Structure formats: C-alpha cells, structure tokens
Length: 349
Image (cartoon, rainbow, N blue to C red; front, side, top):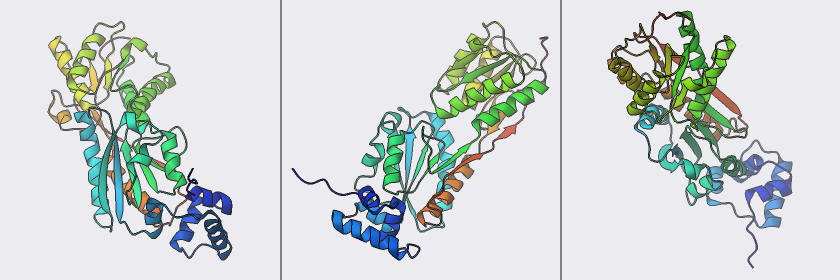
C-alpha cells in the first residue's frame, strides 16, 4: 500500500502554524519570521511534502487567472441570467484593469451541495482566486476544502451554514421591509407574497422580511396569502388567480420578481379589477418589463453591478495577501423604485 501524500494541512499541523503562514513561506513572503520559516521548512523535510499544483500556483502567484464558479438550478431559468449578467459585467469591468484573466465554470445546485464540489472543479487547474456566484446554499465542506488549501474566495449572493471568509450580497430582507413600510403608509393592512423558488436563498430572505415586517407592525400574517412559484410570468398569473379566491383578499401583492408581477397584473386585469385602485403590486429587479407593463411597476432595484465590482476588489486584496485574514460580510442596500402600480388602499379594514 502506497504511503498517503502529505498535504499543506499536514505541514501546518506539524509546524504548529496556520495554512496561510505555510503558503507565505512557500512564496518567500518577507513578512514571515525566521522562526516560523524554519518550522515550516523542518516540517516539509520530515513529511517530504511536495506542494499541490493549485497551492504551488497560488504561492508563486503566476497563474493570473481568477475563476468564476456559477452555481445554478437545472435547467437555468431566464430570470437567473437577467439577475447574474450585471454581476458578471461588474466582475469583468473591475478585472479589466488588473493582470487577471477570468475563467468561468458552471455547476448545478445538486453538485454544489456535495462535499467534493470544489475539489473536482479545481482539479488540475491553476488559479489565483475563486469567485462563487449563485443564490443557493453552498456545502460548508466544500468551503473547508478551499480554506485548508488557502485558496482565496468570495461568495456572491450565496452563503453556507458556517462562517465564510468573505461574502457580498444585497439586502433582500431589508428591501421587503422597506416596501411593506411604504405600503402601510398608503393604508394597506392585508398583504400577499407571490414568491419564487422557495428554497432559493434570496427568496428565503425575502419571505422572512415579509413576515418580520408584518409582525413588527402588529399586522396578521396569513399563511394562505403566501404562495411560491418559479419566477416566471405564468406562475405569477396562476398564483394571483388563487389569491383572488382567498379569504381575506389581500390589497397589496409583493412578488418575487418583475416577471411574476407582470403575470399577477395580467390576472388582475383579466378578472376585471384595476391597479392600483383595487390592488397594489410590487416587483423585484427593476427589469425592462417593469417599465412597459400597464401600469408601470413599482419595484426594487438590487445593486448587482456593484456586487460584482466589490467582490473582485475583495478577492484581489486577498490574493495580494494584503488582508488574507479578511472575514467580512458586505450587505449592499437596494433601492425602491416607485411607479404607478401602487397607491392608497381604498378598501376598509
């Protein structure tokens, strides 16, 4: 039986130092003390350690490649592309003035929730850092794999069940709270949520914001007025028809995205009701459809381009070892765009 190959983690354990310090020794970084350098060198000799290709590349900083790993549902929804393209544009624009090239890989949710996802993704690849873009939970064991190998990474729009090195997201929860505050000021007391995919992290946060905001204002949360679909127009249409039959009937409808809101508006019109005199409808994304539906849609604009920019800035700082111990979660605020689909409530409580 062949002897198990020593890893960077083994060197760190034997030397009593962190994997980051071991990586800096391999890189010849001047900030490492002579004592620490000797401990690492002694451990390497005892273990006969040979750096992994990825770790060696990172230590030398010679690949000039950043990988963007996109975690998607299968099949990928059109609404996903609409959300992610501005993020990718922000990433690309920020990298354009750096020496780094961008490499893109797409993985599906089922794969990303397995412990060896990043191990398989990075096999035989030479990268300096990793951007992870998605809106689904990431298996924490995959992130531990990255941590153990001192591979810099930033999560964009997603998270794990354990603390991560760096995250960039937008405030889904706070955005819905702001919308409800605005609608309460217009006199609305009965709210419905037409949500997208129930397990998607963005929708989880929006649904929580919906419930928290109502409870904070002593308004009742009606479980029968909370429905989930798939972010498509047909789904919004179908769920709005269901809401029209519910008791109580809501006067304010908050939708998971602009497409579902467009479907809800069509259902309201088809049943002979008017917007906003009978119902106020709010979308999410501030997409092109929000400007052309009748009436124009009140919606929430997420800072997607800015997310991509900020993620690259954080990752480059980590790669350059200016802040390798960075542990920061950045939550960017959204903007409420008020148009004609919302108005004062004309129904008595």
